[in-house]
View 1 (cartoon, rainbow, N blue to C red):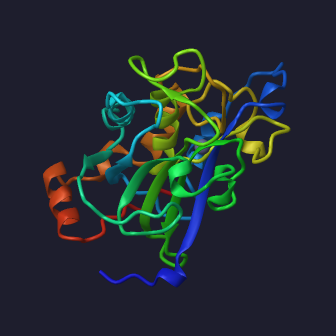
View 2 (cartoon, helix red, strand yellow):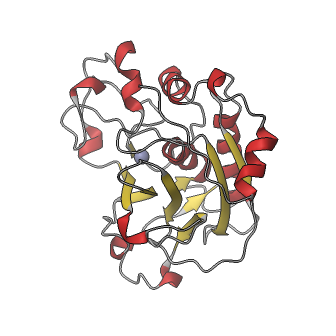
Length: 265
Ligand SMILES: [Zn+2]
């Protein structure tokens, strides 16, 4: 299909490293009210429940392939949720990749110095060096149709590890960060606590335990979704609304036909 590149809009969600903003004391833990969980679905585009992705490269600290496996484990955690209809397939395709540019494939890459960002990855789409990882979503502004979702891990400013490789004493756990970023892939937004940039009243307080909390720190290896994350995804992509079997959707995708699911209002 043809695509009017100039007409597309980029939405970037960035996971920030915990600093002064993330260290605030939360004394009143009320979480997100049940009636507001549906607001965790992205408002500016129609979230997709399908995801065909390819790895461009892994983390520079990891050579045993466990970075890719950790990503797949995190993806499985989302896809296996019984109350959500989520689909994913890994593809292998040799296509040119430029960080921050659209190429028609959902790329996953650790952005290291090899890409020419010598100072920090702040050169990439203007991200701060305190950005740990991000998902960049390209979508058509009028239809809200999502065209591409790239996931970038900051391999310039941070170290990465899994259970079997990388420096265990510092840096970020691939699976933990991937779990959060994959929430964005399927259309969930970041949530914050009061006083933090991006906080909105519907988010309430005490969200630091959520997978979709937008700030993370090194050493956190939590790979579990909270009930709120699970409920938010089920509201966005409820299990009963997609009757087609997985094989049919993958065939449609293989044919180059976009499959978009409109977010329930
Ligand atoms: Zn995020």
